[in-house]
Amino acid sequence: MNGVDPALRALVHIESIGGPVLASMESAGSVSRTTAGERSVAVLLEWDGEIDRLERFGARIRSAGGGIVTADLPLSKVKQLSRLKAKYVELARPLRRELDVSLPEIRASLVHAATPANRGAGVIVGIIDSGIDFRHGAFKDVNDQTRIRSIWDQTLTPQANESSPSGFNYGVEYSMAKINQALAAANPATVVRHSDDEVGHGTHVAGIAAGDGSDPGLGKPAFTFVGVAPEAEIIFVANRSDTQEFGNSVTTLEAVRYIFARAGQLNRPCVINLSQGDNIGPHDGTSLLERGIDAELGAPGRAFVKSAGNEGASSRHAEGRVTDGGCGGPDFKRRRR
Amino acid sequence: MELGDRLLKKLSPGGRAWLATADKDARLAAMLLFARPPSKSDLQRLEAHGVEIVSVSGDVATARIPRDALKEALDEPAVTYVEASRPLTAE
Image (cartoon, rainbow over all chains, first blue to last red; front, side):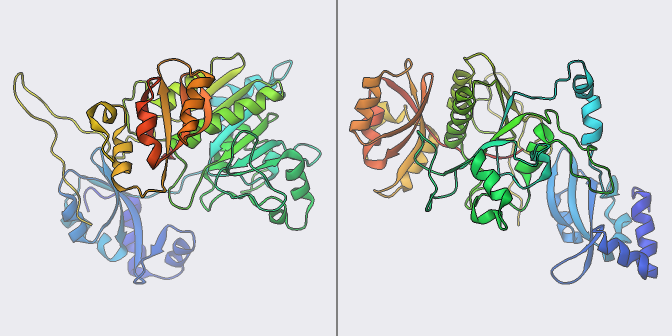
């Protein structure tokens, strides 16, 4: 089986003998079941052929771009992979959390350990994202009180004893006092209705930026997975909705304005993180969202961090050649579903 | 609603697509670009047409524009461009 990585070759052997090894791989998620009950594995293929051919082979395509395809492959097809003549096929490998490695890598650990230590105390970290699990220990202080100054959930409609933030007539704002009240309640959701979504993107992002890592877990002791500013306070705007994955450019600019305004009322420096975006527009800083954010940054003590470089495999780029005086460009093909 | 070329040029492609399908009660979430940071009277004129101004950041304002007020908003001399909201995805 040339062009098939050793783990996949071993899987063929394991599949042929069955038994507890296969069962344990299934319980660990390395092997899953299709809706038809067939065992399948996630793979990466180095592939320059037609995508349709992979589908005819039995692969369920998850993404394609840059010559690499990710797909689910029925286990029964793994032993036939040599027929496919892919350049290389690799079994998906489990990955570990690496925040404990990231902080030393970006030298944040040195800043944390400096004299005086700089761990974000006195700074507001603003996050615009799906939502935050405010009950998580990573966002509480040593007295078990929240470090979240406020949450503006743009997707909720105010109910009794709830209101939208001043200056904005939609969504629900929860104050620090309200969040602490929720944390002390038997059922926090009866006091603060906000929650993160199933993916937990916003909680994940907030943990990297400002989690204190105080919760032990994953077999690791407390303070293993510490965020960049573990003593900062957080202002969170949740813009997830049911109809689209995240918010939109308009509500995002309103979120930026809200966070800087609240930080200004507290007389605190503030850095906002936005780990969402799109690929529409001029890409040169002149879209109205970008201009609006630039305008908000025109005061001292304000910074903005934006995700970038996460879409290399999203097939969102194309190239073509136009000769002098001629016509030309990339050809587009729509993949059959 | 007929906007004419002059006003259509001030509306983003997303706004034009919205206009083609929006019912009469719909409101467009949009960002308005002004020729300069808008004055109070600039904003009041828009609000008189039914435009809800939500926030102002430099020369950009976020707003909710009723379908029936879009023409007046685009025709406002201080407004140079109206960009419909775009959905964002996780990165």
